[in-house]
Image (cartoon, rainbow, N blue to C red):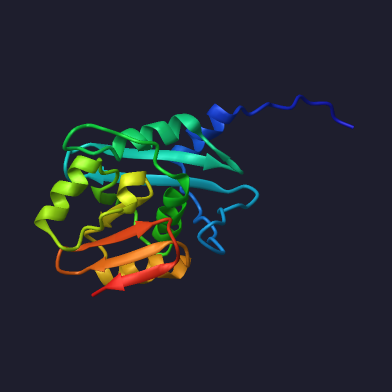
Length: 189
């Protein structure tokens, strides 16, 4: 019997390795309150902010554990760009985003139109548009408005609906899809 030594792989080393590797798609939610849980699962989000010009590419979940540093980075990235206020983004919306992305067969990062909205921003937007909810999920860090140049709003809408978790809004005129971790529902044209 050969003797050898085993190498211990730390979580940080795995994170670094996974962030540069091609990742497999995450499995889907069973419902809005479920979690994407699977042995060996890695979840990654790549986004670009059309408002700030910032980008993010991070693994935020590895084999059953959310990575607090990555969640903090995502929460900062998805802040209200109008006043720089932030809130912790609900990991469930991140899981919905990652699962929907896995259906889209693209390596283009999401363009983030809107993540967290402060009450002041939400009220200002409500005065300007009838399509902004008084108690929007954006106020609670539970929603994201996203677009992809390489995919149509209809393609993104269908992918998000296939996840069968949360709310999915189609805003074809404005060119984006709304995803949230509220009750399962869809709307828009």
